[in-house]
Image (cartoon, rainbow over all chains, first blue to last red; front, top):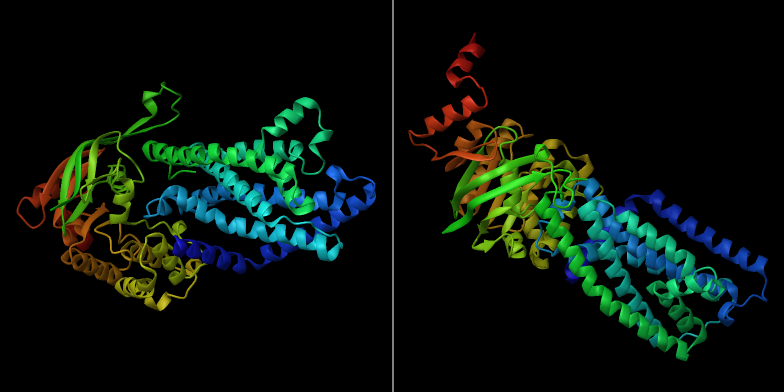
Length: 262
Length: 261
């Protein structure tokens, strides 16, 4: 599997390097986003401390990690969409690599670039804006890994829908915009009405963002352990569902003959 | 040893299916109860006009499609239940220009697919060189895929299919975009691969191509297997007449007279 991962990463790195303009634009967009958050937190003022944290840190960690997770989900959709449009899907699905492994491998380079962007957010918080973090390394690794597993599982469901119905973007849009609103990316979930808070607690990303903020900004807290338990439960449920659903959808597409069409 | 076996294979394409309801007028019968087998090292030509079911047959062997009924065995593995094992044994030369990564070079494209095909890492450079030499594309190894011509894409697709040393090689109109010299070279390669034990199933609508490289020809029309005969025997005249009738082609002798005139 290591050789396959290396091959996919090499293919994506070479492709993105040969599209130089896209690489430069992505870097500029990240810089603009950091500046926006900085001025937004300045405008709101230092007295606003959601969950007891400085607002700029709340924003940087929340938005950085949310972007990482949603970009990860989106990469599954993009992998399928691009290979449907480019005509590589049917070739890829005739190789010896199982279909779920193939899609996960192709999404990994998007995760790598998302992780880089998230790291830039954290480093900017420390070195550019002069904040101090209280990092719980073990908590960070566990929250990160569980959130990654959940994203892989949801990503596989989206990819499965895209393979079979070509409408995976609908599920991504629903999840992406829904969780952007209620999962506590820009403001704490406590600000939401009660019904929306219940909905938020059923979305795994709410717990991912909360867990990540606690692991990076608050050190060791009982709240972090609770978030880890909830994330573990979500991943136990979602990973088999994602793998099973994707494999089933690919099998359906092979049966219906829709694998080759877009 | 039987390498490819079709047993009463039936394949239907249904459009606009809504749960259990389907519009019969939108149903296309791609294959109807087709049965045939191919021995190890044999070259079978699937001959037929457009829409006869040749490409569907290749897609069924490669597991891009699954049959509605009947079963397909590749090297003893059933495509529906053991798809992964089948994919390990089959190399499919899909010649679409869009099936490569345009910004990668010929070599980088092959490296990527070889890794996905579980070719041992150390063997990849040598296997790629062998495959590129076999299809006479070694001189373009470091050229970006987007700069290739149609004929070069065709040869690259064959290189991609043989780089994993498949037990069964599927070729869909392999000489379509090739000039005469390249086509002759490709036919030589096909014979060489078959001598080494590779089973080859080749789809074509050229009677001449089918009879020049294949040991046996299966004639398909509207999803039905019309005839199946060894090449070289007197009986191949029957299949020629049948095929030319099917495609409304003039007999070769008449064509020749017209061209000469």
